[in-house]
Length: 78
View 1 (cartoon, rainbow, N blue to C red):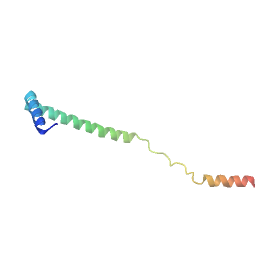
View 2: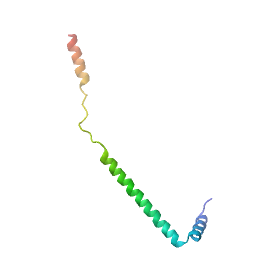
View 3: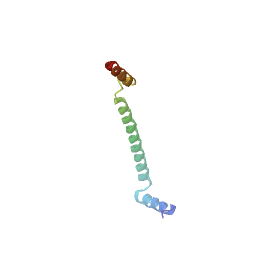
View 4: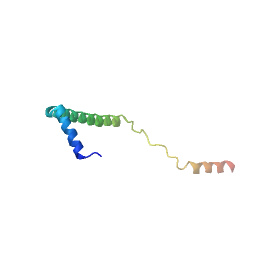
Protein backbone atom coordinates (compact mmCIF):
# COMPACT_ATOMS: atom_id res chain seq x y z
CA UNK A 1 0.00 0.00 0.00
CA UNK A 2 2.16 2.90 1.26
CA UNK A 3 5.84 2.03 1.18
CA UNK A 4 9.09 3.80 1.91
CA UNK A 5 9.54 4.48 -1.83
CA UNK A 6 6.39 6.57 -1.82
CA UNK A 7 7.59 8.65 1.12
CA UNK A 8 10.96 9.31 -0.54
CA UNK A 9 9.29 10.41 -3.78
CA UNK A 10 6.97 12.77 -1.87
CA UNK A 11 9.90 14.27 0.06
CA UNK A 12 11.88 14.81 -3.17
CA UNK A 13 8.93 16.56 -4.82
CA UNK A 14 8.47 18.80 -1.77
CA UNK A 15 12.20 19.59 -1.79
CA UNK A 16 12.09 20.53 -5.46
CA UNK A 17 8.99 22.69 -5.06
CA UNK A 18 10.01 24.62 -1.95
CA UNK A 19 13.79 24.40 -1.91
CA UNK A 20 16.07 23.47 1.00
CA UNK A 21 16.28 26.95 2.53
CA UNK A 22 12.51 27.45 2.51
CA UNK A 23 12.00 24.00 4.11
CA UNK A 24 14.40 24.91 6.93
CA UNK A 25 12.51 28.14 7.52
CA UNK A 26 9.17 26.34 7.52
CA UNK A 27 10.55 23.73 9.95
CA UNK A 28 11.89 26.31 12.38
CA UNK A 29 8.64 28.31 12.23
CA UNK A 30 6.64 25.16 12.87
CA UNK A 31 8.88 24.25 15.83
CA UNK A 32 8.48 27.72 17.33
CA UNK A 33 4.71 27.49 16.93
CA UNK A 34 4.60 24.12 18.70
CA UNK A 35 6.78 25.43 21.56
CA UNK A 36 4.55 28.49 21.92
CA UNK A 37 1.46 26.30 22.00
CA UNK A 38 2.92 24.05 24.70
CA UNK A 39 3.99 27.06 26.78
CA UNK A 40 0.55 28.64 26.59
CA UNK A 41 -1.12 25.34 27.49
CA UNK A 42 1.03 24.91 30.61
CA UNK A 43 0.48 28.57 31.52
CA UNK A 44 -3.28 28.13 31.15
CA UNK A 45 -3.22 25.08 33.40
CA UNK A 46 -1.30 27.04 36.05
CA UNK A 47 -3.83 29.88 35.91
CA UNK A 48 -6.75 27.45 36.16
CA UNK A 49 -5.19 25.79 39.21
CA UNK A 50 -4.65 29.19 40.84
CA UNK A 51 -8.28 30.20 40.24
CA UNK A 52 -9.76 27.15 41.97
CA UNK A 53 -11.44 28.04 45.24
CA UNK A 54 -10.04 26.07 48.19
CA UNK A 55 -12.58 24.61 50.61
CA UNK A 56 -13.21 26.93 53.55
CA UNK A 57 -14.25 24.36 56.11
CA UNK A 58 -14.54 20.60 56.18
CA UNK A 59 -17.91 19.09 55.43
CA UNK A 60 -20.17 18.32 58.37
CA UNK A 61 -19.99 14.84 59.81
CA UNK A 62 -23.35 13.07 59.85
CA UNK A 63 -22.23 9.61 60.90
CA UNK A 64 -24.16 9.47 64.19
CA UNK A 65 -27.41 11.08 63.10
CA UNK A 66 -29.35 7.84 62.70
CA UNK A 67 -28.39 6.63 66.15
CA UNK A 68 -29.39 9.93 67.76
CA UNK A 69 -32.66 10.06 65.75
CA UNK A 70 -33.71 6.61 66.92
CA UNK A 71 -32.74 7.46 70.52
CA UNK A 72 -34.86 10.63 70.36
CA UNK A 73 -37.84 8.66 69.00
CA UNK A 74 -37.54 6.17 71.83
CA UNK A 75 -37.37 9.01 74.38
CA UNK A 76 -40.50 10.65 72.92
CA UNK A 77 -42.57 7.47 73.03
CA UNK A 78 -41.56 6.64 76.58
